[in-house]
Length: 390
Image (cartoon, rainbow, N blue to C red; front, side, top):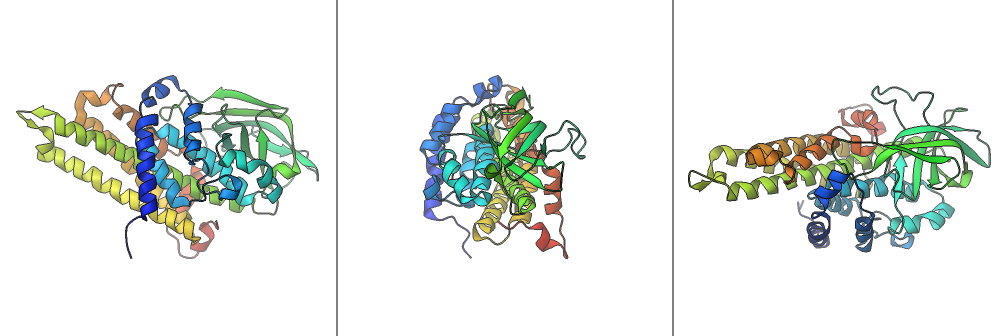
């Protein structure tokens, strides 16, 4: 077995890293401070063909796989995790399920402009009551007035990714009349849809998330996904790609923290010598490097399994658990190495630390952490049941 990436993926990494340094990094601090999503930056991602990586070329994507996808997220998150999160939300939670679970007429009508990046997509996954992890409350989003022609959406979804910026949303809503779960493709100008309060987050601040309210919003039946009874399979699949996305971003944050701390340790002198020569600093940098590399290969293994169609859900959950914790530790260690400079906003480490904590607490994957935790547990009798079929 050869533990190395194909040449074309290494070339992709080089292209994305150069783009990230030139286009995403310079304005990252300003976007974070202003909580501003940069739509022109997303358009530049589209120009590079990065907005529909796992989607076939016939539908406007680049025809790549999940391994290419995680490399792109890793390199973007190394300099701006918010940019990576917006791309992940667009791709994994909206564009990919539209391709994987949508009907052929839906793909033909909607997929190309979103996979190509001409339009931006958002998503609202099955929600939990805020702060409790319990079932949705009376104000939550539900599907009502179901018939053969369509469904009505009624209620408020408290956490929709890319909210206020997206041109369309994939919204999940349980039925009030049955045990069915609907996934509805809803345009932002649909009658009855209103954008609510934007969520003010600790980290990932230029990654938009907020409320959507729907009042008797009618969605034609041909704009719903999973009508063939695969809606729960779709949710498990989204848990897998959500975990994979958060894990890849965490690797990028850990690498960004390691790069910044290493550069500082080479330049900062104490008693006439760089602090990077001190054993205590070297041990910290070594531990950060080991953790980042281990997390990276956990992510690559999970992506490879998804590409091969041999499960991958449990591997993605394991990768996310380890990578997110490693990123938070790496960012904190980097702040410690830089001392007072690590706490100053003009340096990027305090932003990386805040972003790492958001990734660690699952905010980047739309609040489905309860289901994701089940995939981490080692099981014997139910292992095949916990792995989504992609």
